[in-house]
Length: 487
Image 1 (spheres, rainbow, N blue to C red):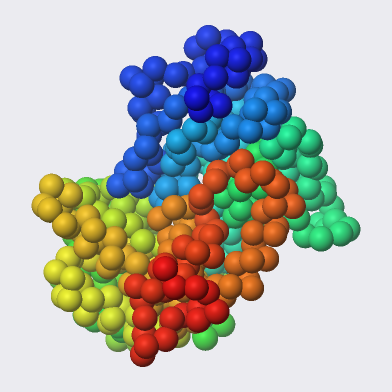
Image 2: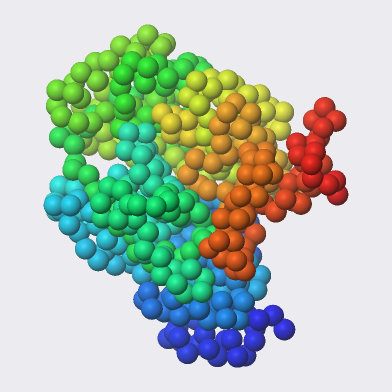
């Protein structure tokens, strides 16, 4: 009998929680079978919904004692199957730990539990004219614990950074129930930078129960410029030109024709429909600085071949422009029965080349692609359109997506910018990292979780998996990792 089905284990688990906080019936656990990447599904055996840190630690200690694996889940908005349930594991849902414990307007910090929604932090801090900068498109729903697990970004990450740049401290618990207090209220802490290690660790090392985030004062003025282009490559080149001109936008986003049409039909943001791509470039700061930067951005965009340039003339219009971009992912759902959202990052200078190659691969694979991405930091989000009801199309979309990620690595980029690796990109980790690097990753995992009970099978592939993957990707007669055995 699996340990998770042991009467002794289940009885002990029930003793820690209210009856409604422990789910075992398939009709109750099935809503947790996937995260935002619905192509990957697995109904969990047991779901627990603790409402306190004490319950979390007790659950972890019990699972460790019985050698039962634990997969931690937040709001379930992840897009890499990072919170996909694992057979024989407890699914630990932290959505009920959703309290903002403290806001310190003088220190410009907020102490929050992991289930607090990203946007709720800024809403609570607005009374002090402060806000939390990282703003994923799912910020109305995604939770801060998940943001830390995936090192999420958003449209304003170019200027203000990812989650790792906007947090100060974590309370986290190892699988055997030991407390880790990582980081400091100061700008730096002695010792290894475990705060950065924990951020983006995808639930592999510890379970986070509290986060101290940095808050920023709202800028005096923010203004966005919309530029239309008759060629996607020109729009890609304009991104680098803006940065080269000395302007660091608060946000610099790009959408191609398909994404524009979908977003405009859905939100009516006022986007031009007779172009191949648009850029949204927002600058913020004090009045004088914004005026100077807007002038420079206009000049650069015109010189880069923009066919139309608009500047939002009101806060309402600025928000409308961004509403279209924020709604682009759900809007693209209007174009096809299904879409597969990728997440890779490349050097900005490679944008024109990579966009051209994606267009060529779209023809090769016979699947349309809508491109929506954080152009300023090279974080691509190609949305591959397909119909899961058509035999083979899901596999075709997955294969196409994998090739896009491998292209990102080929040009000096990475296989993820903010969605994480999860299960979705685990094969492409074999393209990104060498055997010695992957070995070090496993050693770090073992230092925190020697029994491999936290989110097993995710993020870091076993070396034999890379050998098998390499055997299917022989190039020029050579395996990517010739030191590994063939299978």
